[in-house]
Length: 397
Image (cartoon, rainbow, N blue to C red; front, top):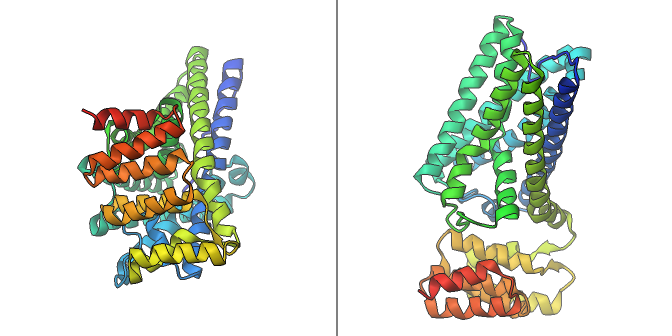
C-alpha cells in the first residue's frame, strides 16, 4: 500500500512546460523552507517549555493550551503539536520525487506516517476546539471543522485508490490532502502577508475576528486547494496557453507567500527561536507564573527587583511584557493586562508601541479617556502610526 504525495509525473516538452515546472519547484521549495522553520519553532518552544516546567507558556500561542488538572486535555494538545511537526517533516520528504523513484519502500512507509500524522493532528485539533474553544467566533470555528472534514475525506480517498493500485488518482487525492493538511501553516503565512501589504485592515487580533481573518480562516486551505485543482486540470489537458497561465498563477502565489513567509519569520519564528535558545530566562514566563501564584502586584515587584539585581539572567526585551499583556487581553483579564503593559511603558517610555498597547488595553476595559491619552502619546512618538491614528479617530467619535 502506498500513500504517495509525490507530484504527478509530467513530460515537459515546451517552454510553457518548463516554465510551469520551474514555478512549481519554486513554490515547493518556499513551502518546505517555511514549513521547516515553523516546525523547528514549534518543536523548540514547546519542548523547552515542558523541560523547564513552564506549562503556562503553552498558553502564549494557544488559548487554554495548558489547563492545570486536565491531563487528558493537555495530552490532546501534545498530540496535536507532535502531529503538526511530524506532518511537516514527513510531508516535505513525501513530495521529493527522487525518494519515490530510488527508495520506494521509504516512500511507502513515510506515506503511512504522514497519513497518521494528518489524522492525529486534525483529530486532536477538533477535540481541542470542542473541549477548550479557541479565539475567533462561530464562523472561524466552522472553518476548523471544515478543514478537518476535508483532511479526513481526502485521506480516505487517497488510501482507497492506493489499495486499488490506481496510483494516478491516488497521487491526485494525496496532493489535495497535502495542501488542506497545511491550513495552519498557510494561515500563519497569509495573515502576515496581508498585514505587510495592506496593514491590519479587517483584522482584530485581540478577538481574532474581522472580515479579513474570517476570509483567511477558510482561504488558508481553500485557496491552495483551488490552485491545486487548477494545476491538476492543466496537467490533464494539452495547450501551452493553459500552462503559461498556470505558471504565472503559481509564480504570483509564490511571491505572495514569500512576503508572508519573510514577515512570519521576522516577526514570530526567528524571535521565538532566539528566545527559546537564549541562556536568559524570558521574564514574561517568570512573571506569568508569579501572577498565577501570588497576583499581579507581586509580579510587578518581582520584575523590578530582578531587573535591578540580575539583569543578565533574564530577557527584559520590550516584546516580553507586550506579549504577556496581550495574553491577558485575549482572556479578557484587562486589569492585569493594564498593569503589565503599564510596566512596559515604565521600562520603555520612548517606544510608541508600548503606549499603543496600553491604549488598546484601556480601550478594551472601557476607559476611553486613558485609552485616548495613551494612543495620543504613541502617535506623538511615532507620527506615522496608522493604527494609533485610526484608534484615536474611532475613540473620538
